[in-house]
Picture 1 (cartoon, rainbow, N blue to C red):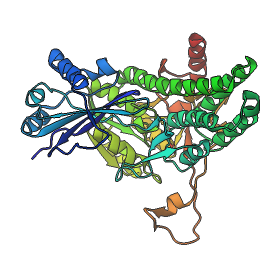
Picture 2 (picture 1 turned 135 degrees about the horizontal axis):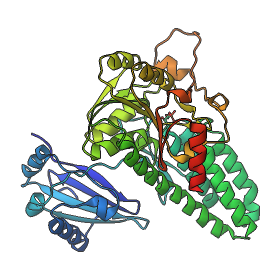
Picture 3 (picture 1 turned 45 degrees about the horizontal axis):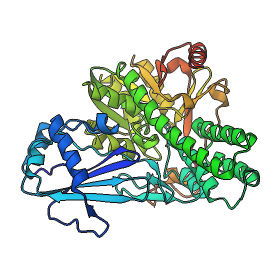
Picture 4 (picture 1 turned 180 degrees about the vertical axis):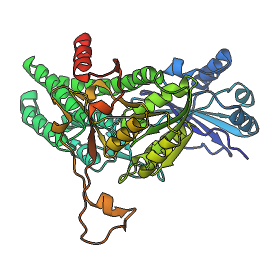
Length: 463
Ligand code: MRU
């Protein structure tokens, strides 16, 4: 029997609504308080609108329910449906309304799609979905100090250039909140140390340094203006939260611009994970794919597995499946063959750093995909927010490439794959020369070669 939707929907940073379908009435937890008023308000919206447009009402929301799932839902009319609303920031209040909701089910023509919460500022600390455990386990880690945030970045519990940048900003805020210093002046050397520790986590993704520099500039300004430590703490957190929101907005804008470049139907290859899990939500390359799908394009995603850390096989596949976007995982060495068979109409990837001349550093293997695309006459697109563009670095040759532990190559799932003592190389990124890049999709618009000129022009326009 098809299961109806059992879903978590994050609708806003401060308001989370969870719809849970219970087979038995089990929600008797002591912290749960019945609140028919709030429940009614939501039900009323549902009936008024005919469809409950969470996107419009709450900023983020679901897509339309497939007919098949609607029937599945209808089959469960006799089961209990619970609606829980959790309002943040703390004190965390849970409202719950449990009832058979027979009429509600008829008026419920939409899917409650899961919103992936890659990272989140909470009253307890910074909460991360543990990307080392996905897709088999969905667990969360709470970092309660800046050094724990640094660990989480190094160990790739959180990864992906934009997500790393915002994590660092949250880490700095956490450091400011937890300080024993009594004044801004006393905190200043500690602030510098916190920034240095976070900057030492991963070298390639420039978003990390962009976010840290932005926090440093803010701190310097506050210090110069004689701000109190309490004011500094408040302002740093506000800016980190602003970066979080800006990142999602940038991804949505890239999605809108990039959707136009996607084929109306066909296969789109992506490498690594440049999705919701690599950002604060929606994704860059996967944001472009989401944007295209939302506009009715029939896209089938081919996700390179992305050796050795398997971001494609584990993360891209997981998050696209959660959205119901058709996805096929392929081993990294299969792309050429699929291209030759005419199964790939476009490639879209993310970036960790884009040099002033348009050279793109991204996950190792991206360069070979770009060459393959060119050979087969397939457009190769790079989607990245402006915070990934590093005009201070002239070409890709100057981009520092992180070398990661050999064990990522020698071992998988705790099992050794290679003979003891064999030489291993594990560069986490490579550089794709600008000449292979058909277009760069940013939140400011689409750029084409010559990138040294178009990047500069767009920078000037933005100023
Ligand atoms: O090593 P990772 O997993 O952090 O590498 C991630 C990538 O290479 C992504 O493609 C890039 O950061 C862009 S994410 C929007």
